[in-house]
Image 1 (cartoon, one colour):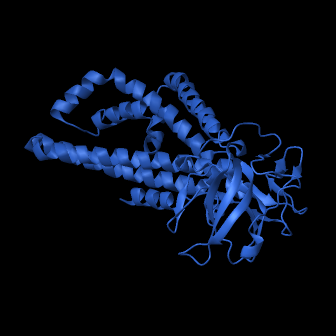
Image 2 (image 1 turned 180 degrees about the vertical axis):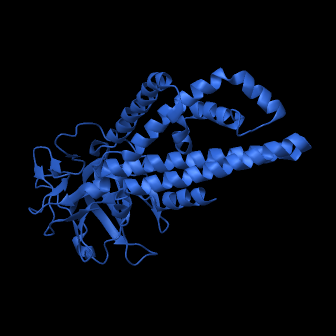
Image 3 (image 1 turned 30 degrees about the horizontal axis):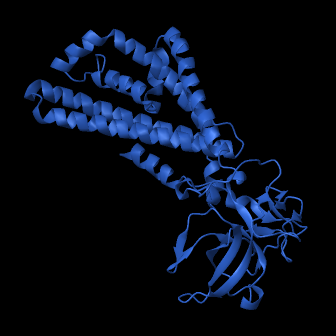
Length: 364
């Protein structure tokens, strides 16, 4: 169906904020949203006409196969509403990230308020609806059983009634006023929870430490990889870490040097060798340099960031993608200092972590 295809195409185009086509998505105009809603209206009219036809068929031929067909249409209607809700929420997220008012969310809230008014009126007509179910599932000149049940279902599950929003214009305004704020309050309560989840992803959860490369050799199965044994001040235990530095740092410059290690990544095999951390480097497409801890640093010294107190996780949960979320915000400033959001990597009492020469680049 046309509206369903339109919605799916928009949802497929919805992308992560760092994707190159993201700016095109966030510029979606209010007119485009209105066009989508118009397509949904057409879809709902199509569904209503189908229901009317099925109602007439049921009158003359019983409710055998037609009941299944009716249910199929209702399921398709619910699926369309779910897609609409997803679209509205995703557009709103992009608007907020771009610093714009969340227009789609506002439309959604208004539709919810109108739906609440329609649902209240439907409840008062329940006896008529039961009679309609027994004799005639849907008639255009009577309250539609499908609409009343759908309104109740939407209230229970939070589905978006975007296609039915225009039908609420003639409803009881008192009911809309009393129910509308309740819906808005419900949505408002969800936002702090999301904010809390985002705030929990903080640089303090990353365990950056000074390490010393004690041994180093080339990976037996990969020409571009080194396999290092690194002392991180863990009581004599040496960590095995695999780094793709063969093309950038000669092997004789690797041994016995101090490095900065992200030490609480979950161990992972790299070409058959288990790697227990990551050596941090300043990086450009052409060149990679190992970061240099401040003079006087010792294996095990922790890296901190002013304004971000806290204790690192023992091991980062890969499913929560904490490192992946924060990684784009690490870099090297014009003074060669490694930074997170402009805040220097610091070893307490000893100084800042720097790059050998690269500036204005990423750290990874």
